[in-house]
Image 1 (cartoon, each protein chain N blue to C red):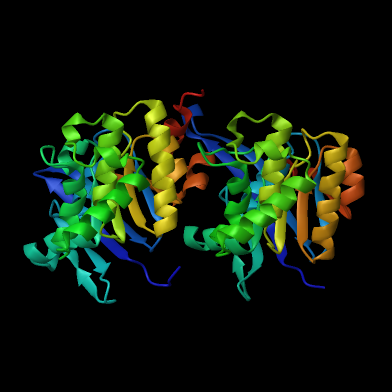
Image 2 (image 1 turned 180 degrees about the vertical axis):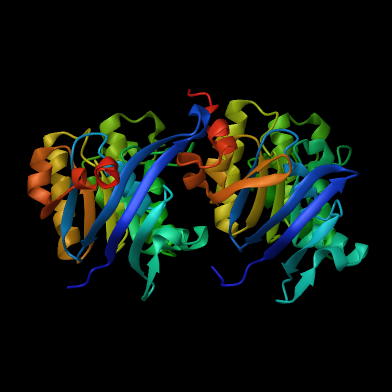
Length: 258
Length: 235
């Protein structure tokens, strides 16, 4: 672990007119650290994620990112082109619905290869070999490489989306309900896969989820949001085993025991 | 002798916001220290706060008052007020914990569950697995189980995986939450041997043992938790 964070977020707020999206969110994220953002629908967690990934511009506040060359850059002062480049290379974004993050009408191999070409790879054989390698890492058989994701199951699509995001070796990955809408058995497989990849690659990740079990399995740190504000934050197991805020206690006590 | 863990005036209560904010005091005025090479035991009846104390020492429960001073990375830090990042670093390098129950992860083999703490500390996977094998052997876990995820194991088998996972590292402080609760006599003896080896290596151990045989064999002294009953101090 290095001693410098990767991302510094300070007093970030987003208002939709007079309605609060998220308000006054401050935190640091270190390399290799997985932060879970939990809360019920409408708590502002997706707004926060979209602001952090610059898909949405905040109303106020700052977020700085430490680039690969060690330089700190203020995200909301970068040009659109610079932000897009960051998004394509150093960052990943895993959407809840794989169709939002994949190109559904080109082959699985091309979905993975496209990100490589975006960072300047031109050698077809190399791109294909890397694509095959990544498909196997997310447990998709090599003989499906020329199929379109339209022909994949939900779990496979989600794994393909993960491969597409990780192929460029990003340092920071945003995930919006990565296991939402999947069967429990498919979910377990995906979680296990994500957990392994995050550990092996030393990724930093911000995972938005309403599922506390997902947060427990994937993250070391957690922020609980309600009505756009962070009501509690800390070590994931501390927040879940000794919840202090009334809302966190309600969330934790609402988990169904299996 | 070195004293890697000093607890002073720690208090803990739970505020139940869903029950009209009623406050349940757990412990107060908790003060003790553990020397390197000794095994102390938290004693007292169920509900006295033994597990809560252990969980505070691991950063799993928040601390209301007081300090938990730990020798970490060549300096002293107060775990009670440390940032989550510091607590994670303390767990990786300084304080190990054997919990009562194994929290299983789908699809990870018993061998890798045991080896993981070493891999996290930067040891290469092969040598971590070799150490895991020898510990599982010592704990008499049948070899045919090593490649399987422990979710389907019996209670005793899971506990042995958990013990191996806790004992594999060279953390200078080791917390044990009833590590022998569901073990047979032969395996209890193995745990007693493992504890003795840790003591010889200069590890400071703090445990909860309901099993009197294990307690007598392993412990150097008993810390009476009833002395820290929250009501006593308040009254």
